[in-house]
Image 1: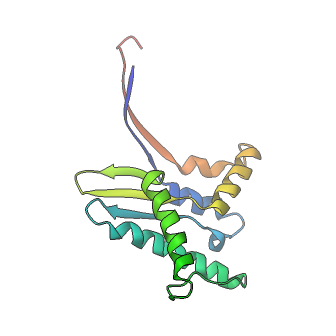
Image 2 (image 1 turned 45 degrees about the vertical axis):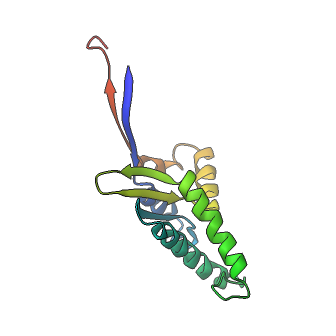
Length: 144
């Protein structure tokens, strides 16, 4: 029996759905995007978008924002580099070789923590997982 062409879809929608009951979409710290295989800067763009989203939350909590200013550019660059490295090694969901893009996803620590708590709370609370779709081609003998 062979399992080939496995794909998982709709993580972004699932995370939004997970936050629906408490209307806590603004607390989401995940980032999703498409990255060109040939353009190294497109991964930086996805990470920049995530950092900008984080800055809104940091501002609301009274924390110092990540900035492009030269004084704290090193901190900004370290955060950017950390997430770029994570996305390039762990965050690739799918590679579409025909269109030359990667689909990347960073599930932030806040969203991951909420997802884990909902799963541990039982099936009724883990309904967000029903929004994640999995597709696979199975090659098996006819008698199976």
